Image 1 (cartoon, helix red, strand yellow):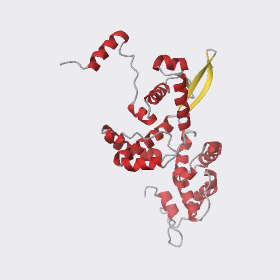
Image 2 (image 1 turned 120 degrees about the vertical axis):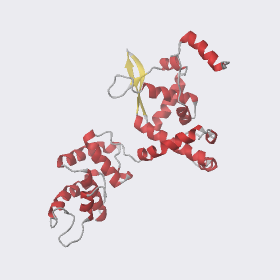
Image 3 (image 1 turned 90 degrees about the vertical axis):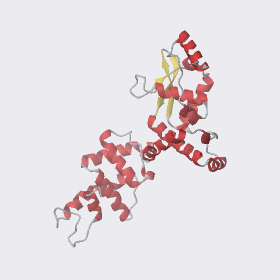
Image 4 (image 1 turned 180 degrees about the vertical axis):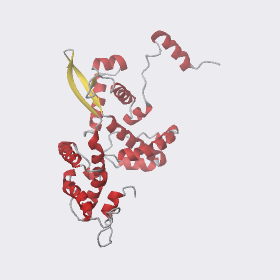
Length: 287
């Protein structure tokens, strides 16, 4: 069977430099950046992001190394690092390495995953209805990069996009509680889901969240109690602010549960025979 030109030259190059001297670029990253160079730099950021020894996740690569390894100029690297920092999934700083100032970066995989999923969902809409998407993008001044107009002509992506949708809906609706110790994260997720997205943790509130959730943990509050407290406050027309705003209500719920004991095995039945639905759901979270 006759070799293709690609196979012929691949073997020739391998003979000179070896099979390992290949720069791999994920097509999806090029599509996200709408640029081959941007996709290349993004691919390498992700590749090197967990290869460093710094426990905080910082890795470094000099502009000289970028040029030698991937043939991209200092200007190009700076441009794309700035874009990715603006997108929110990359942090960047300059520290000395062997006495020389060197670019360091830190990749946030969770934030990038959410951005990439949003991008693919949008691309899914382009494939379904390209004319609608092009019209809406023309009217938007917030787009950082134009949507690829050839998206509808890329058939391989249909199956890949469909496979991502179930996972993406859950991922996009999950609050970021990674700043908390693991034993506090379930309580934080429960409050965030019960109170709604407008009450999700923000960076400037992190210290208050840590203090409040440590208090909840010390009080022995459970996820069901947090959910019930939010429901009680909404039922009573009380304003829900941050997590600290429900602490008193959540603390009182176990005491309220102990007060209703006409039916020991069904504490949600009040003395007059009516049902306290908050307590019912507290004891029957699956229903």
